[in-house]
Image (cartoon, rainbow, N blue to C red; front, top):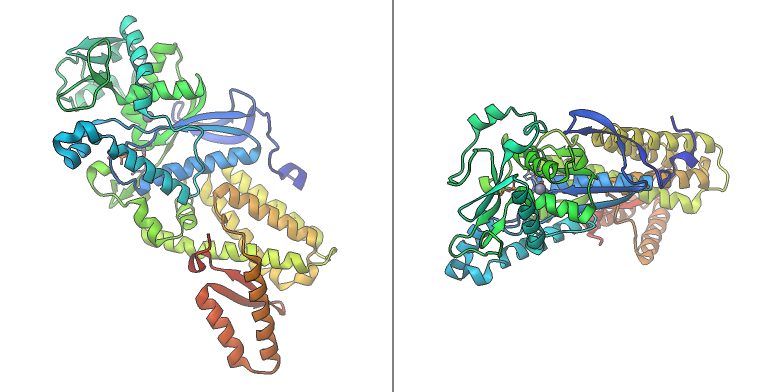
Length: 500
Ligand SMILES: Nc1ncnc2c1ncn2[C@@H]1O[C@H](COP(=O)(O)OP(=O)(O)OP(=O)(O)O)[C@@H](O)[C@H]1O
Ligand SMILES: [Zn+2]
């Protein structure tokens, strides 16, 4: 149990290998301590988007979770190298380009991925998802992929058929082990794609032979393009080095995508696992079904962001454990907007108290101890396989404590205690990626304070109607006044006032 602030301050794991985090590893099906391969650095790859349509809230959930993951490690002092790719050539991209450009597809197809990549990055910025260390694209790494395939063919792990190259899963020790699948059952259940040269239904394409009116790249086997599973192995290894610490994505990727990535790397590198921890985020469903572009049941991120506060959207995702599915609901986000208002109120109140608190208050130690406890509980929650619902509820507890206890006894609380509460509130919100809009123009602050003085003076003269009018009119603007402990506090409803 952490007892004093020096041990809960951020950055205390700089240069560390053993982190205090326990995380569920799909590869071992166990919750394990998170240990880094290189001191102080966490390297990870999250499978990214096939950009042929609007990104949806399922994509947003995966991105927000790994952003939280990254922010927590950074808070501990770890340098996080997070790579996420764009699968910018794929059957579905070609199909979308064909619909849009018809026969002129070959000259214009790249406009499709380019458009949706740009939009995706804009949505990520709006959601306060920090930019990745690198965003490799398949089209920029084809030459490396060709070299890999060549080597796999040379070693007998892949075979050529009609200009395509297939990976031979029968040559892989314990194929199916990762996703816990039995090979015979897999074969029975496999949806065999019409790929004539394939020897085994579970073999998959490393190189897909060119078809007329499709983009292509040159290779020793003729024109074509690489296959999905190979792409992620090549790009993750290239940008992170092998082995690296963690590899993630949505739950839907466990099989076949990650099973096949592991199979390729197993024979290429001779490594049982080319990434140590495999982390999978539960799906966002809609009416019990996976939200997915190909099923046509998506709620675009843009729809959600046009109606709701982006920070509330983050809290909404984080309020469910990352491994559980979410059945998407707008009302859940709405509830989080209220929560967020309360958290901003706490922050604004603490700043106002900071300006007035005495150097030495009487309940100093008790408040400081309480601040520690909130932070310890918060960290313990995240250390417990990223129990973000418990972490969010600790932030809410802290906010309620400030809004109900601290504001009523401003004369008792010292500047030091307020600064501890502010620290803890800021750490928690930085990790969750909320309270990104704390700066308020000082002119606005002066104006609010002037109006509060006028209101006070009206009340002293018993002109309550006029005093209430000030409060109501400010409220309409998103400036909310509250009278607690004999003084007036205010907070700004960031969504209403639309502050940057
Ligand atoms: N509904 C969902 N919930 C959570 N994660 C998802 C969901 N859909 C996709 N993902 C994740 O988003 C990333 C990108 O997936 P992808 O572009 O293949 O999306 P998709 O909507 O499933 O597309 P498609 O319908 O073409 O299969 C992957 O990590 C995937 O696991
Ligand atoms: Zn992938």
